[in-house]
Amino acid sequence: MSFRNRVSLQDEMRGIIEEPLLHLVPKRFDYVGDIAVISIPPELAAYKGAIASKLLSMRGNTRAVLNKISKLEGEHRVADFDLLLGESTETLHRENGYTYKLDVKKVFFNPRLYSERGRIAAKITPGEYILIPFAGVGPFVLPAAGKGAKVSAVEINPDACACLQENIRINKLEKQVTVIQGDFENISEAKDLQLPENGFDRAIVPTPYGMDNSLIGVSKLVRKGGHIHFYTFKAESQIPDLIKEYEKMGLEVEFYRRRGNVAPGISRWVFDLIEVSPIIK
Image 1 (tube, rainbow, N blue to C red):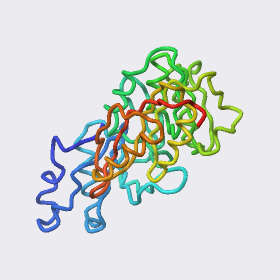
Image 2 (image 1 turned 90 degrees about the vertical axis):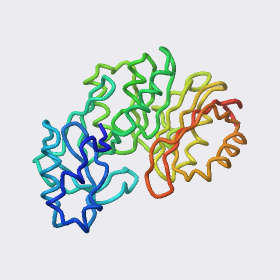
Image 3 (image 1 turned 90 degrees about the horizontal axis):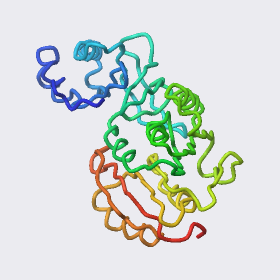
């Protein structure tokens, strides 16, 4: 789960961190399973141990504290972390009725999107054929498969693929999911990607930053009338032009909304799109 401070960490650190630096204490931090994940600014380096101890005490079953020291980097979309407290970065995370086994240092997982993942799962009907690129450890995959869909999940990070396979097994969804390890840009040529006769009924695309071009490839694989849930990082001022761009691509914008801020002036947005042009473009 994600904490927007039911109990303010800043208030908890009052009297421990000197007052002029108190405003630098992060307002948000995450729990992935029993691991707390926070990003402590360099100005508070001397207080890392105290902050970690406080986080450990704020939720009873917390076993480890990680400090995120870099943004997501490389094609595998992983950040660098310092283990401040605890012995292991492996955990079991439970969300929307599913269990995810993962190593927080080796794979990307965003617990803040749990309600969004539930929203998408509620739209899925049994028997759908669904494509999920950038599948990670399966936070969109398992709920879709659990609704009775046939899911093709594509992921380039071998560690994430291994976790995804294990999570499919743990949740007993082996018959519903095909996992393809590879780069989605080249995946249409992969032998493991079996395109349904009329195209996929739905695609769920948790796009990494800067990879919006993946929508072109996805839209070619979705049938006419099919649905695409596309995530992108944009400033609000860019949205009107983005909608026009999607419409030029033959995509109807059914719904869109902001799904969290990621940097000053930049937010994650989700677009629910309908494929209105033929599958071959």
